[in-house]
Length: 168
Image (cartoon, rainbow, N blue to C red):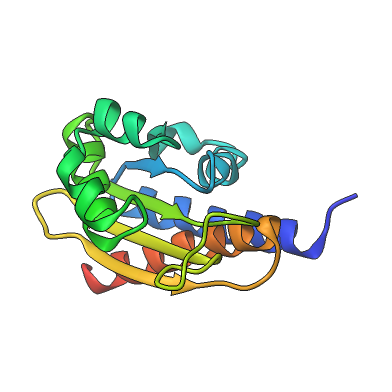
């Protein structure tokens, strides 16, 4: 049985795919807390191979460093859930792919792992077009682990549409 949120996600992912295809752009993902959920949503769309290049699932700090070239000192200084690290993730994803656009997501989905500075539900995002500076944001989502992750997927895709609209 398909839920309302599943239908909304299919619609949003289809809209992202249509926008990317209209502009002749391809997408690369660098996901941490979403664990590939953004990639799944996009590749559920028939024909996604025309605009989806690849995804990096960099859940651990070591994976962020090895697969995306994120500097260990950046993770040490700001933490994996930071605007600086997600910006480095999109930079690394673009450098290691032929894609035109990148999204990075890193957050604390819970139930543990939060702190006073970065409570459970803190998620950082980066969207970057090749040869441009990344657009970064920190958001706070509520609910259990599943809810935080689902809200992160929706937000990542919804804001990609905004970034693409702002860049023509």
